[in-house]
Length: 327
Image 1 (cartoon, rainbow, N blue to C red):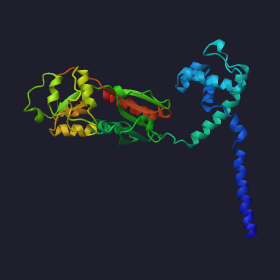
Image 2 (image 1 turned 90 degrees about the vertical axis):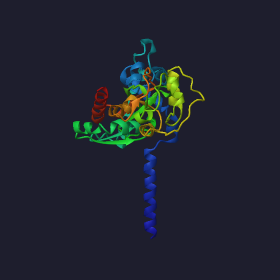
Image 3 (image 1 turned 180 degrees about the horizontal axis):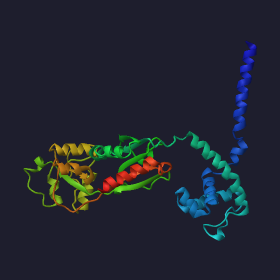
Image 4 (image 1 turned 180 degrees about the vertical axis):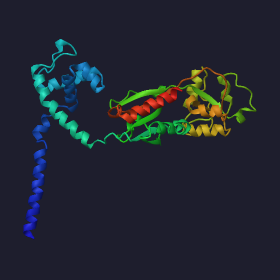
């Protein structure tokens, strides 16, 4: 038993020694420069200059310049010949340092890719705003499957910010309100799909006993239906030059397709973009209230991680949905 215990202890010590062998020493860890600066410097040397590095990393060239200055301060030596412009050459010291780190970063990237989920062009996951999913996309997704029978599409209606999209999601379609637009994170890429007008709609039965609405301000006297807040109606009235502060009331349904369901059942007047209500207007379930100038409050946007942008399934889906929206 004692010999077994000794052997087990030697195995544990051997494992610890191997871990220590492959890890950094405290001195090495303290010597490491900032990783973001290393990434920027690798791109400068590989791509041939600051501006080209900025394009490759999808960040502002001023940020690349800051990373370069930080790395030069750490190295205590110029690494880039600025006299030759933003697309100039590395100094002799810089070129030597670049050769040393480029291979190491290549090894790190290769190791990371082994752990990342690989692109599967046969299984395509789409997150979509619930209103668009229920009112428009579900009625057309069969056309995509017929055109691309080898792609198994999975549609998940979900309200979530694009930044939460992980590596298991291929595309995220969401509505971006103009007033809430933000700068896109570097890891993502987006394309605007459609900028539809916002319409006031109601059921024919609801409007049957009401006089015509001659102007947008007249709608303040009617039962209005809202999503999560009064903001959409407030912005709609604002676009028409109507002051609505303190004058808005009515039930809130938190999601657009629920608000439209209430409008179809004669509960009041709802706001919706023309894409969501197109089928209902053509089928007579809803009618547009008034003949007012068009109002635009936002756009539908498709967002994905940059690593997936050129995937075959995504390219096919993006082209299909753009063609479908254009018809």
